[in-house]
Amino acid sequence: MEREIVITGIGGQGIQLAGQILARAAVAEDREVMMLGTYGGTMRGGNTESTIIIGDGPLISPPIVSRIGTALVMHHQFWATTQAKLRPQSLLMVNSSLFEGELDRDAHRIVEIPATERADEAGSSLAGALVLLGAYVRVTEIVGFGALIQGLQDSLPAYRSQHLPLNEKAIKLGYDSAPTTRAPAWIEEAPS
Image (cartoon, rainbow, N blue to C red; front, top):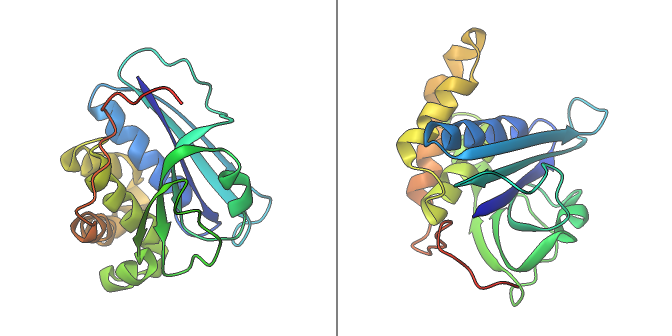
């Protein structure tokens, strides 16, 4: 069984870091993982997307997927590309602090988290994607919380180690603020 997750937003929101953390957390739990980060030509403000494939056995899907079951959406800009890939009843984790796009609540399972606001509470609005990631892990249990923190520690280079406490706090705020809604990642679903 494999799960396709896309984390999307605009450059500077921590999308690529969040994808790397999730991928490393899955590896720490002995799962098979592929990850592909894409971004526009600008450093800040351009489109950015991280696609992560996680499985409990050899992976079939390439890291460029045409259909996805989960999206973590930090911003409405560039949303249309991700929206077009969604399967019916996909799980959408949405940053309600910034997202102003259209959401089809009948077609998808939507969990809204004020990720940017929670990141401000942690100490930096730039950690919003980590808040959303923490909430996603709580809702789906795709990886354990300990593995997620290990993924963070493994993802930060030594010259950025001063950001570790803030980033841990952001992930924990997201995890703790997740609603009681559950969408376990590893339960077999009926074919769509």
